[in-house]
Length: 384
Length: 116
Image 1 (cartoon, rainbow over the protein chains, first blue to last red):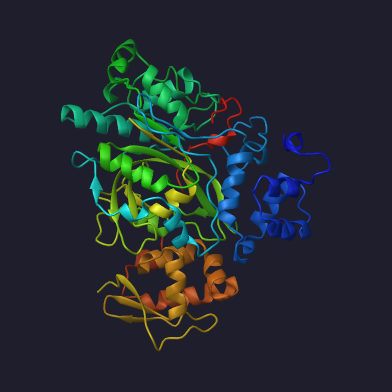
Image 2: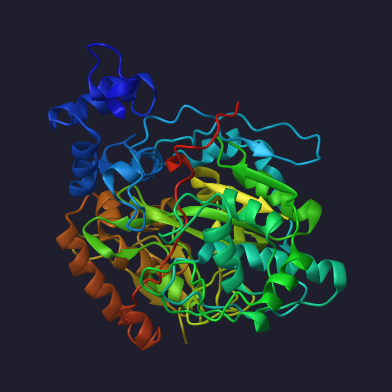
């Protein structure tokens, strides 16, 4: 808990300053608002989004950090099972490159540039100028799917990466079962929340290596929730045939990485370009505290063109979403050089007006997220 | 003809509760302050501008130094200006329920081994 990591006589805000979550000046502002705990901090941030109007007060970045560090404690992730509160994270969250000789990225902290500081962020981001080439790793037309009522986005993104890999290898696009893989992820992996929706790419990585995934016809996806049965074991499967088929598509990942201080966008771009393989990424979703039903993924721009809005200074993090990145479209107007093309799992009604000359995204259901968004807020990414 | 582009234009001026925009062919012309605000928010098309204002009106208020109510008034005026230049479902979009997501925060997992 938070108190455990506090030094003697150290206030909550002093602790956050010491651990560089806040500047001393921000702490002074919050002290005036009588913030003395995670709960009161979160309440102040979402009640007064106008704090984002203060230069240097990066509300999206701060709430994203809170969501990461204290999500279970403050209950902002609705699907979180209420795991014990986690103190300020003490572990680094670098990259893994199994069998590769690439260095781990330093640290887990994401920079919190002052509003308007995106150009300087671009300069900090090593090699940002190299995000210049259009990339499309799809094998061809590839209609999106729909996760329906279930929080199974990680299964859809990971299975999409597996299908794309198979297409590169065998020149044929298989139809693999998100139903099976979500069951394997929730019921057969190290995922600590088998009875709650949602997961981490870290566990998807392990589930795909150990359990694999069967073809769709052997256990078709059920878009409806089954109360009390998140993995949907026994709901039409997994049959012996499915269990026998799945290991054929098991694969160890080529690379996994958590969000790091700088270089997320260039790393993702490099993985796409150099290896021509899709990448699953998890990113936070941001909402307007005054309009909690709205968010930056579900705006008019998202439903029409798959455009994920960059979070403005008054936005707060409310959870996360995983998608499959299939390409990159350079755009000189974007501070870091362009937009990553994403394959979403909300069916073709999201991004329904694609393709469109003003937006990246080859088909309905695809979309785009800016390189700046990835750079600042990436949670995890996985490549097979 | 649909408007497709945003452009800063001289001679246009903001007034509280009025974005002061004009349509010129395929271009939505904006006062300089609004054009700069749009750029800072990563917005480069008329539809994305409508989306940003509709979803995060406080962000526009923040950028312009307005009250949110003044943004709402200006938003109504903007949509009136764009009537006939953008589809009706853009100007009066239907409400969508955002589908479930499901990515959890990596830093929530207490059992992850420490790695440096």
